[in-house]
Amino acid sequence: MAYREDMMLGPVIVDVAGLSLTQDDEALLREPWVGGIILFTRNYRDVAQLRELVAQIRAVRPELLVCVDQEGGRVQRFRDGFTIIPPMADIGAVYRRDAMQGIALARACGWLMAAELRSCGVDLSFAPVLDLDDERCAVIANRSFSIDPAIMSVLSEAFIDGMHEANMCATGKHFPGHGAVAGDSHHETPVDERPLGEIIDADLRPYRHLCRQGKLDAVMPAHVVYSAVDSHPAGFSSLWLQNILKKMMRFDGVIFSDDLTMEGAGVIADMGERARVALAAGCTALLVCNQRDAQLAVVEALKQSGLQPASNLQRLKRPFAWPTLDELRATLQWQQNHRLLQETLAV
Image (cartoon, rainbow, N blue to C red; front, side, top):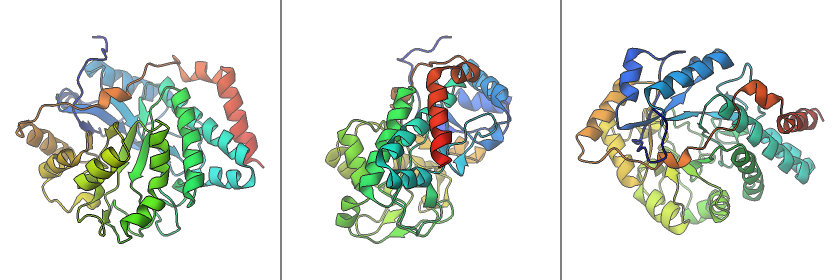
């Protein structure tokens, strides 16, 4: 069955445990409420195996969105056989030495990351990180280009331009900003006590810039409570998602919840209720990772909700440009961008 643009995708993004699909995996992927799959390091051995896994996924449902966290630095799930993308902070350091060189490096890294994934059949990397690093949050740290919102705006735009040139959409995260809290939302629900005006003047500046430029295709909110604004984490907050992101900033793309199994989402105990509240708040896609029971619970809860299994995920699908990674590496564009990366970081 060939993929068609009008095929509807459900909002739930799930994962699988191994290097290939099991029968249980295939059954889950056939659920109409499932719209995509996120891959992790455990799903990767080498490029040939990855291409085979993606082919298995496409054989089940060709329209599914295949995703990964391939930001660069310490968050790069596929490494052996791929270009190693530096931490975004390294690009920020180059920019501070030479602005034009930093912008060129950001664009080259965005292109290399996206083009290599696309050559293996992967649709989307959840990148770039737009969090401003004020050296308080260890889980962000060098994943951030800078603490300076002006530098973040310039470099994230260049990185996204590279992604778009490679025919991959971009996801800004973690809205409105995870960098000012010490806690890790994987393990707790951090609370950011700053007033809204301070967040608008700093953390939201890159989002406003990218929205005005039409560069953000998707946004992922943080499992962080901004207590001066709302008592709910941003991903469960209609104030953040509907009033600020959609209305004030005029964002109309895909809104991914961060992983609903994270402790940061634990303010709501029931997994199905987490999914319902996230959708009601404004999320249009739901990540549910590393717990098959939780994935099944979310799917069942949504079946019982009276809602339709619909999302706007298909807006993130783009045609593939390169049949294989080897053919990509033979192109002048890959060689030029790779050389720029190697020579710039060698300085």
